[in-house]
Image 1 (cartoon, each protein chain N blue to C red):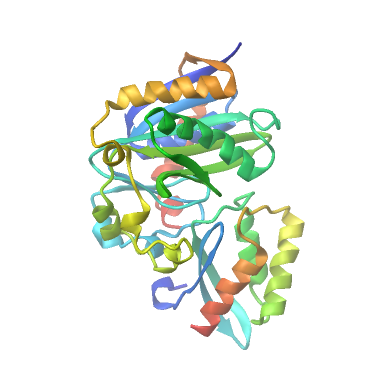
Image 2 (image 1 turned 90 degrees about the vertical axis):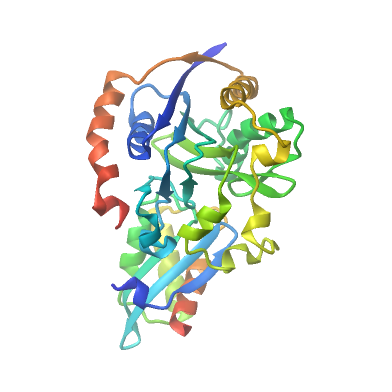
Length: 247
Length: 96
């Protein structure tokens, strides 16, 4: 069985994590599945403007950065009960299809299998969401480079919706065509669905198992290569820069 | 461009929300900015789209053709979002 590298970065500053994320995509190691949990922070999608999407004066105690993939804001409150994941793999029409939505569906399958394991009615909602009873529980974002894909996503265990609404400028148009009366009813998280707080490490282990089953690989814990570490070092200034975040 | 003083055109495609901010001079686009949670590959091509729109006549047909041309030249893929969605968002900004 093919071995894949696995890394759990733990609780991280999201600027450091986004640099490592990009380094894994551009590095020499390839096939990797990794986890992290962000400290209180906001990550903008590639096409989002901070001043448009956020009520910036209210975001002063948040770390803000931008990622290299599109999609919407990834918001992390100080409860730190989110499992964020990354997958870097080769687009080969076998594990990861060339078709963008199909490849999202394939990776999101790991999350769906995990949620089904806990007895929840989980489904993929194109383009990039995983839902439980039609409520979003996971957002995902993908980018591609030289035959490889990088997909990041989050699984919410707990989430402070009021705080997210407080700091963002979300126009009503966003939810109109999803026929959802309010954002509050459109989102959910694991603690709420299960009525209990699961141990985050336990959920991560289920995700790892589901990843191995779905992709028929064996995960082996590893670390960043020297080249990836060097790349990370060279990418860090970008993720900390005003030019990148507030462009 | 002073975005927050400009009225946005907001359009929701299947792939995400597109907010456009447009300045017009003599019926042509002088300056344009887009913010949104859509997906577009390769990502950097968004800057080509915006650059190529500058100087374009501010009417639906010209805008659509211009964006379609950039899509073709840059080999752009944007699941759930089409050139017509960007056009719609810009048209709404012009009408705002």
